[in-house]
Image (cartoon, rainbow, N blue to C red; front, side, top):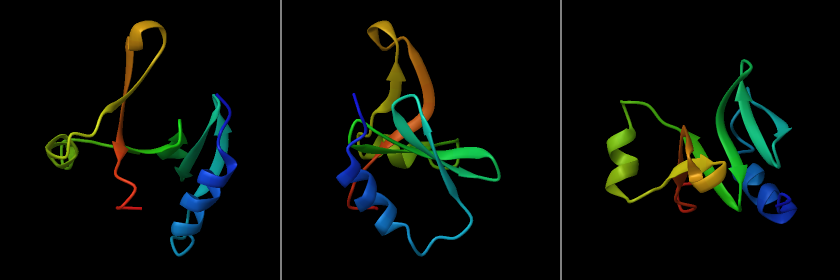
Amino acid sequence: MALNEEFENFVLDQLQGMDGFETKSMFGGLALLSHGSAFAKIKHEKVWLKVDESNLADFKKYGMGKYTYEKENSRKLNFFETPIEVI
């Protein structure tokens, strides 16, 4: 699925005060990178943030889903859906 340009622009507009990141088109989505490492992605009209042990419980508490891909969603990455209200 192609990236929804209107949604992408909305998210990037919300982040305009945040310095030090770049964007890169990757695998039909848009990666947000800091110092060459992805910390977020925009895909399927959702924002996915990279999660670790320090904030995983918060994402699970709000029922946010983990980013998956490939056949039957067999591959999982440490990116979780982010409520749009947070952005």
